[in-house]
Image 1: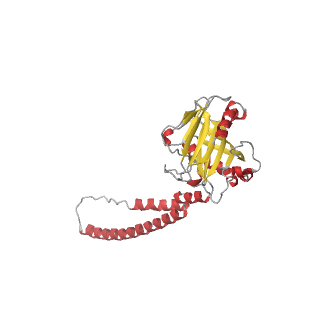
Image 2: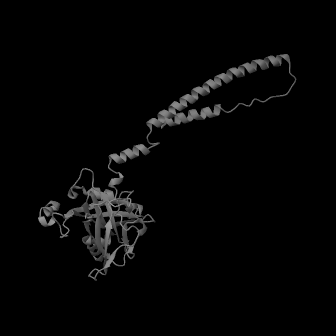
Image 3: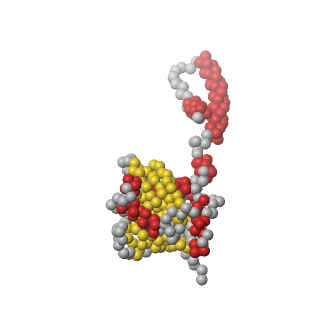
Length: 323
Protein backbone atom coordinates (compact mmCIF):
# COMPACT_ATOMS: atom_id res chain seq x y z
CA UNK A 1 0.00 0.00 0.00
CA UNK A 2 3.00 2.32 0.68
CA UNK A 3 4.12 1.75 -2.93
CA UNK A 4 0.66 2.80 -4.09
CA UNK A 5 0.86 6.17 -2.30
CA UNK A 6 4.39 6.77 -3.61
CA UNK A 7 3.27 6.13 -7.21
CA UNK A 8 0.24 8.37 -6.64
CA UNK A 9 2.45 11.19 -5.37
CA UNK A 10 4.73 10.87 -8.39
CA UNK A 11 1.73 10.94 -10.72
CA UNK A 12 0.37 14.12 -9.11
CA UNK A 13 3.80 15.72 -9.42
CA UNK A 14 3.83 14.86 -13.11
CA UNK A 15 0.42 16.41 -13.61
CA UNK A 16 1.44 19.55 -11.73
CA UNK A 17 4.67 19.96 -13.67
CA UNK A 18 2.96 19.31 -16.99
CA UNK A 19 0.75 22.40 -16.49
CA UNK A 20 1.89 25.09 -18.97
CA UNK A 21 3.66 28.14 -17.57
CA UNK A 22 2.08 31.56 -18.18
CA UNK A 23 4.66 34.35 -18.37
CA UNK A 24 3.12 37.85 -18.29
CA UNK A 25 4.11 40.10 -21.24
CA UNK A 26 4.40 43.88 -20.74
CA UNK A 27 4.24 46.03 -23.84
CA UNK A 28 6.95 48.70 -23.83
CA UNK A 29 9.64 50.23 -26.03
CA UNK A 30 12.34 47.70 -26.87
CA UNK A 31 16.00 48.63 -26.50
CA UNK A 32 19.18 46.81 -27.48
CA UNK A 33 19.91 45.85 -23.91
CA UNK A 34 16.40 44.53 -23.52
CA UNK A 35 16.85 42.45 -26.69
CA UNK A 36 20.04 41.02 -25.30
CA UNK A 37 18.28 40.22 -22.02
CA UNK A 38 15.41 38.70 -23.94
CA UNK A 39 17.82 36.54 -25.92
CA UNK A 40 19.49 35.35 -22.73
CA UNK A 41 16.09 34.68 -21.13
CA UNK A 42 14.96 32.72 -24.20
CA UNK A 43 18.11 30.63 -24.04
CA UNK A 44 17.59 30.02 -20.36
CA UNK A 45 13.95 29.05 -20.97
CA UNK A 46 15.00 26.59 -23.67
CA UNK A 47 17.47 25.03 -21.26
CA UNK A 48 14.82 24.87 -18.54
CA UNK A 49 12.38 23.35 -21.01
CA UNK A 50 14.86 20.58 -21.85
CA UNK A 51 15.47 19.93 -18.15
CA UNK A 52 11.73 19.93 -17.46
CA UNK A 53 11.04 17.44 -20.27
CA UNK A 54 13.85 15.23 -19.02
CA UNK A 55 12.44 15.35 -15.50
CA UNK A 56 8.92 14.60 -16.75
CA UNK A 57 10.16 11.63 -18.74
CA UNK A 58 12.04 10.25 -15.73
CA UNK A 59 9.03 10.81 -13.43
CA UNK A 60 6.63 9.07 -15.78
CA UNK A 61 8.99 6.11 -16.09
CA UNK A 62 9.36 5.88 -12.32
CA UNK A 63 5.60 6.13 -11.75
CA UNK A 64 4.95 3.42 -14.35
CA UNK A 65 7.46 1.06 -12.74
CA UNK A 66 6.06 1.71 -9.26
CA UNK A 67 2.47 1.17 -10.40
CA UNK A 68 3.35 -2.05 -12.26
CA UNK A 69 5.19 -3.37 -9.20
CA UNK A 70 2.27 -2.49 -6.93
CA UNK A 71 -0.32 -4.21 -9.10
CA UNK A 72 1.80 -7.32 -9.50
CA UNK A 73 2.35 -7.67 -5.75
CA UNK A 74 -1.08 -6.57 -4.41
CA UNK A 75 -3.74 -9.22 -5.13
CA UNK A 76 -6.24 -7.37 -2.91
CA UNK A 77 -6.75 -4.74 -5.62
CA UNK A 78 -7.73 -7.24 -8.34
CA UNK A 79 -8.73 -10.35 -6.37
CA UNK A 80 -11.00 -12.10 -8.87
CA UNK A 81 -8.64 -14.74 -10.21
CA UNK A 82 -7.07 -15.38 -6.80
CA UNK A 83 -10.46 -15.68 -5.10
CA UNK A 84 -11.67 -18.14 -7.73
CA UNK A 85 -8.56 -20.25 -7.19
CA UNK A 86 -9.03 -20.18 -3.42
CA UNK A 87 -12.69 -21.21 -3.82
CA UNK A 88 -11.65 -24.15 -5.97
CA UNK A 89 -9.00 -25.19 -3.44
CA UNK A 90 -11.53 -25.17 -0.59
CA UNK A 91 -14.02 -27.25 -2.62
CA UNK A 92 -16.51 -24.39 -2.81
CA UNK A 93 -17.22 -24.86 -6.51
CA UNK A 94 -20.59 -25.03 -8.25
CA UNK A 95 -20.78 -28.84 -8.08
CA UNK A 96 -20.87 -28.72 -4.27
CA UNK A 97 -23.70 -26.16 -4.07
CA UNK A 98 -27.27 -27.37 -3.63
CA UNK A 99 -29.69 -26.34 -6.37
CA UNK A 100 -33.33 -27.08 -7.08
CA UNK A 101 -33.98 -30.54 -8.45
CA UNK A 102 -35.67 -29.55 -11.70
CA UNK A 103 -38.98 -31.11 -12.64
CA UNK A 104 -39.25 -32.73 -16.03
CA UNK A 105 -42.58 -30.93 -16.49
CA UNK A 106 -40.90 -27.56 -15.93
CA UNK A 107 -43.28 -24.74 -14.97
CA UNK A 108 -46.38 -26.86 -15.62
CA UNK A 109 -48.46 -27.55 -12.51
CA UNK A 110 -47.25 -30.55 -10.44
CA UNK A 111 -48.96 -33.91 -10.37
CA UNK A 112 -51.03 -34.00 -7.15
CA UNK A 113 -53.05 -36.87 -5.68
CA UNK A 114 -55.54 -36.35 -2.85
CA UNK A 115 -55.13 -38.54 0.23
CA UNK A 116 -57.50 -39.55 2.99
CA UNK A 117 -57.37 -37.31 6.09
CA UNK A 118 -55.08 -38.51 8.88
CA UNK A 119 -54.29 -37.39 12.41
CA UNK A 120 -52.04 -34.61 11.08
CA UNK A 121 -54.69 -33.15 8.79
CA UNK A 122 -55.50 -33.27 5.10
CA UNK A 123 -52.51 -34.16 2.96
CA UNK A 124 -51.85 -34.57 -0.74
CA UNK A 125 -49.15 -36.56 -2.53
CA UNK A 126 -46.88 -35.06 -5.16
CA UNK A 127 -45.22 -37.39 -7.67
CA UNK A 128 -42.82 -35.99 -10.25
CA UNK A 129 -39.96 -37.07 -12.47
CA UNK A 130 -36.88 -35.04 -11.58
CA UNK A 131 -33.95 -34.31 -13.87
CA UNK A 132 -30.32 -35.10 -13.22
CA UNK A 133 -29.24 -32.14 -15.34
CA UNK A 134 -29.49 -28.42 -14.58
CA UNK A 135 -30.38 -27.34 -18.12
CA UNK A 136 -33.72 -29.11 -18.51
CA UNK A 137 -32.35 -31.93 -20.63
CA UNK A 138 -32.98 -35.60 -19.92
CA UNK A 139 -30.24 -37.98 -18.79
CA UNK A 140 -31.30 -41.60 -19.41
CA UNK A 141 -30.37 -43.84 -16.51
CA UNK A 142 -29.83 -40.94 -14.09
CA UNK A 143 -33.17 -39.12 -13.94
CA UNK A 144 -35.35 -40.12 -10.99
CA UNK A 145 -38.97 -40.16 -9.86
CA UNK A 146 -39.71 -38.68 -6.44
CA UNK A 147 -42.82 -38.41 -4.30
CA UNK A 148 -43.77 -36.99 -0.92
CA UNK A 149 -46.86 -36.01 1.09
CA UNK A 150 -47.55 -32.53 2.45
CA UNK A 151 -50.51 -30.49 3.79
CA UNK A 152 -53.07 -29.70 1.10
CA UNK A 153 -53.23 -26.00 2.00
CA UNK A 154 -49.52 -25.30 1.60
CA UNK A 155 -48.71 -22.81 -1.18
CA UNK A 156 -46.25 -23.54 -3.99
CA UNK A 157 -43.60 -20.84 -4.49
CA UNK A 158 -41.80 -19.77 -7.67
CA UNK A 159 -43.18 -22.54 -9.84
CA UNK A 160 -41.73 -20.85 -12.92
CA UNK A 161 -38.22 -21.73 -11.69
CA UNK A 162 -38.95 -25.39 -12.35
CA UNK A 163 -38.20 -26.58 -8.83
CA UNK A 164 -40.29 -27.57 -5.82
CA UNK A 165 -40.80 -25.42 -2.73
CA UNK A 166 -43.91 -25.01 -0.59
CA UNK A 167 -44.80 -22.81 2.39
CA UNK A 168 -47.35 -22.91 5.19
CA UNK A 169 -48.69 -19.35 5.09
CA UNK A 170 -49.80 -19.52 8.73
CA UNK A 171 -46.44 -20.10 10.39
CA UNK A 172 -43.82 -19.91 7.62
CA UNK A 173 -42.87 -23.60 7.64
CA UNK A 174 -41.34 -24.62 4.31
CA UNK A 175 -40.14 -27.57 2.28
CA UNK A 176 -37.65 -27.71 -0.61
CA UNK A 177 -36.48 -30.44 -2.97
CA UNK A 178 -32.79 -29.92 -3.70
CA UNK A 179 -29.91 -31.81 -5.23
CA UNK A 180 -26.12 -31.75 -5.06
CA UNK A 181 -23.43 -33.95 -6.53
CA UNK A 182 -21.55 -36.40 -4.36
CA UNK A 183 -18.13 -35.16 -3.20
CA UNK A 184 -15.30 -36.08 -5.52
CA UNK A 185 -13.79 -39.44 -4.63
CA UNK A 186 -16.72 -40.50 -2.41
CA UNK A 187 -18.98 -43.27 -3.70
CA UNK A 188 -21.00 -44.22 -0.61
CA UNK A 189 -23.65 -41.90 0.84
CA UNK A 190 -22.72 -43.06 4.33
CA UNK A 191 -19.15 -41.81 3.88
CA UNK A 192 -20.12 -38.26 2.96
CA UNK A 193 -19.15 -35.92 5.85
CA UNK A 194 -22.30 -34.47 7.38
CA UNK A 195 -20.83 -30.97 7.18
CA UNK A 196 -20.85 -31.36 3.38
CA UNK A 197 -24.65 -31.29 3.39
CA UNK A 198 -24.76 -28.16 5.53
CA UNK A 199 -22.24 -26.33 3.36
CA UNK A 200 -24.07 -27.35 0.18
CA UNK A 201 -27.54 -26.34 1.37
CA UNK A 202 -26.63 -23.06 3.05
CA UNK A 203 -23.99 -21.86 0.57
CA UNK A 204 -24.54 -18.15 -0.27
CA UNK A 205 -24.75 -19.11 -3.97
CA UNK A 206 -27.24 -21.90 -3.35
CA UNK A 207 -30.94 -21.85 -4.09
CA UNK A 208 -31.96 -21.53 -0.44
CA UNK A 209 -30.15 -18.21 0.01
CA UNK A 210 -30.84 -16.93 -3.50
CA UNK A 211 -34.58 -17.33 -2.90
CA UNK A 212 -34.85 -14.92 0.00
CA UNK A 213 -33.31 -16.70 3.00
CA UNK A 214 -30.63 -14.55 4.63
CA UNK A 215 -28.64 -17.18 6.53
CA UNK A 216 -26.51 -15.94 9.43
CA UNK A 217 -25.25 -19.31 10.73
CA UNK A 218 -26.04 -23.01 10.47
CA UNK A 219 -25.10 -26.39 11.91
CA UNK A 220 -25.79 -30.04 11.13
CA UNK A 221 -27.02 -31.53 14.40
CA UNK A 222 -27.24 -35.25 13.62
CA UNK A 223 -27.03 -37.80 10.84
CA UNK A 224 -28.03 -41.44 10.36
CA UNK A 225 -28.57 -43.93 7.57
CA UNK A 226 -32.12 -45.17 6.96
CA UNK A 227 -33.88 -47.91 5.08
CA UNK A 228 -36.69 -46.88 2.72
CA UNK A 229 -38.87 -49.60 4.26
CA UNK A 230 -37.98 -48.70 7.84
CA UNK A 231 -37.79 -45.07 8.93
CA UNK A 232 -36.33 -45.93 12.32
CA UNK A 233 -32.69 -45.60 13.32
CA UNK A 234 -30.48 -48.00 11.40
CA UNK A 235 -27.47 -48.41 13.65
CA UNK A 236 -25.78 -50.67 11.15
CA UNK A 237 -25.82 -48.04 8.40
CA UNK A 238 -26.31 -48.67 4.71
CA UNK A 239 -24.15 -51.77 4.63
CA UNK A 240 -26.50 -53.73 6.87
CA UNK A 241 -29.51 -53.07 4.66
CA UNK A 242 -27.69 -53.68 1.41
CA UNK A 243 -26.48 -57.06 2.61
CA UNK A 244 -29.93 -58.57 2.36
CA UNK A 245 -31.19 -59.75 -1.01
CA UNK A 246 -34.52 -57.96 -0.61
CA UNK A 247 -32.71 -54.62 -0.38
CA UNK A 248 -30.06 -55.16 -3.04
CA UNK A 249 -31.63 -52.58 -5.37
CA UNK A 250 -32.51 -50.10 -2.63
CA UNK A 251 -31.32 -46.54 -3.12
CA UNK A 252 -29.16 -45.38 -0.18
CA UNK A 253 -31.05 -43.05 2.16
CA UNK A 254 -29.83 -40.74 4.91
CA UNK A 255 -31.56 -38.53 7.48
CA UNK A 256 -30.04 -35.38 8.97
CA UNK A 257 -31.27 -32.70 11.34
CA UNK A 258 -30.11 -29.10 10.91
CA UNK A 259 -30.51 -25.78 12.62
CA UNK A 260 -29.94 -22.39 11.06
CA UNK A 261 -30.52 -18.73 11.83
CA UNK A 262 -32.20 -16.42 9.35
CA UNK A 263 -32.30 -12.62 9.38
CA UNK A 264 -35.56 -10.80 8.72
CA UNK A 265 -35.89 -7.52 6.84
CA UNK A 266 -35.63 -5.72 10.20
CA UNK A 267 -32.36 -7.54 10.94
CA UNK A 268 -34.08 -9.74 13.53
CA UNK A 269 -32.54 -13.19 13.99
CA UNK A 270 -34.89 -16.18 13.89
CA UNK A 271 -33.60 -19.66 14.71
CA UNK A 272 -35.06 -22.47 12.62
CA UNK A 273 -34.67 -26.24 12.61
CA UNK A 274 -35.31 -28.75 9.88
CA UNK A 275 -34.99 -32.28 8.59
CA UNK A 276 -33.00 -33.31 5.53
CA UNK A 277 -34.02 -36.60 3.95
CA UNK A 278 -31.49 -37.58 1.27
CA UNK A 279 -31.13 -40.29 -1.39
CA UNK A 280 -28.12 -40.93 -3.61
CA UNK A 281 -28.55 -42.16 -7.16
CA UNK A 282 -26.18 -41.90 -10.12
CA UNK A 283 -23.69 -39.75 -8.20
CA UNK A 284 -26.36 -37.18 -7.30
CA UNK A 285 -27.90 -36.62 -3.86
CA UNK A 286 -31.59 -35.68 -3.91
CA UNK A 287 -32.75 -33.98 -0.72
CA UNK A 288 -36.05 -32.93 0.79
CA UNK A 289 -35.50 -30.15 3.35
CA UNK A 290 -38.09 -28.96 5.86
CA UNK A 291 -37.74 -25.72 7.81
CA UNK A 292 -39.67 -24.74 10.96
CA UNK A 293 -39.42 -22.27 13.81
CA UNK A 294 -36.95 -23.80 16.28
CA UNK A 295 -39.13 -23.14 19.34
CA UNK A 296 -42.15 -24.87 17.80
CA UNK A 297 -39.97 -27.67 16.41
CA UNK A 298 -38.51 -28.40 19.85
CA UNK A 299 -41.97 -28.50 21.45
CA UNK A 300 -42.64 -31.65 19.42
CA UNK A 301 -46.15 -30.50 18.64
CA UNK A 302 -48.01 -30.36 15.35
CA UNK A 303 -45.23 -28.46 13.52
CA UNK A 304 -42.64 -31.13 14.40
CA UNK A 305 -45.03 -33.96 13.57
CA UNK A 306 -45.85 -32.41 10.18
CA UNK A 307 -42.16 -31.98 9.32
CA UNK A 308 -41.38 -35.58 10.26
CA UNK A 309 -44.40 -36.85 8.34
CA UNK A 310 -43.27 -35.02 5.19
CA UNK A 311 -39.69 -36.30 5.52
CA UNK A 312 -40.83 -39.88 6.21
CA UNK A 313 -43.00 -39.86 3.08
CA UNK A 314 -40.15 -38.81 0.77
CA UNK A 315 -39.29 -41.50 -1.78
CA UNK A 316 -36.85 -41.60 -4.70
CA UNK A 317 -36.68 -44.31 -7.34
CA UNK A 318 -34.88 -44.76 -10.64
CA UNK A 319 -36.53 -43.99 -13.98
CA UNK A 320 -35.72 -46.74 -16.44
CA UNK A 321 -36.12 -45.88 -20.10
CA UNK A 322 -34.92 -49.14 -21.66
CA UNK A 323 -37.11 -51.15 -24.01
